Image 1: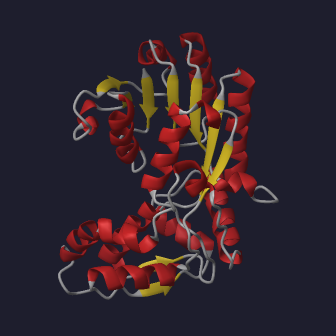
Image 2: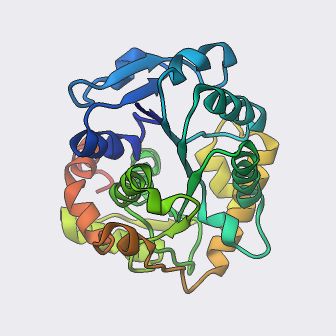
Length: 293
């Protein structure tokens, strides 16, 4: 049995159908049963919280492969999950890490993920590590400031990033979970074209036929305040500020061939992602009327 954590998020929603088509029904772990709506028929749902060790044995019973996506910075909970996975007999694990691990010097966000990679190695479970760049789907977050202020906020100015499609991350994860050749490997996953935020917006404008004003944010701290109006935990806020500064400074953008190497197909372009998700933007913008669009 294969257990998927984070199954109802932007990667999980792509991963579960792919795995189901490849090898049959899988088990998903969710905090609320209602969130599993829309997953493929036959998907086994376990309602549990990854931070509650008492729920882990039942969730992991009969599981031999695990896709681990664990938000936040709670290493103790990850350690408990890995211990439970080893006890349950999990034979293979795919961990969703971050490309920030490969930045030199390593920023705080990278260090958190690297420490988890080290925890996995310490528990001795054969693993594949995926280190994706920023997700194309994160651009859906633009809708929040388009609604509130009528603009897309640009926190990185000249910085470029080759955003990766969650569908490509999921496709790599499927291969890693079903093919022993990927055990022990680490893959850095990116798209094929480094773009600035303004260039991303121009692509989306062309696809949906709407004008989207862009406002460059004065400081990383301001960007974090917009994202967390009620305040972020200090360690997280500091890490986000650090990350935004690094992204602004990276005017080239990292590009790898790992998606194609693993899946046999080139990564999706940002334009293709926009075309597949155009309705989500159109619907979100239609709630604004024509005031800001």
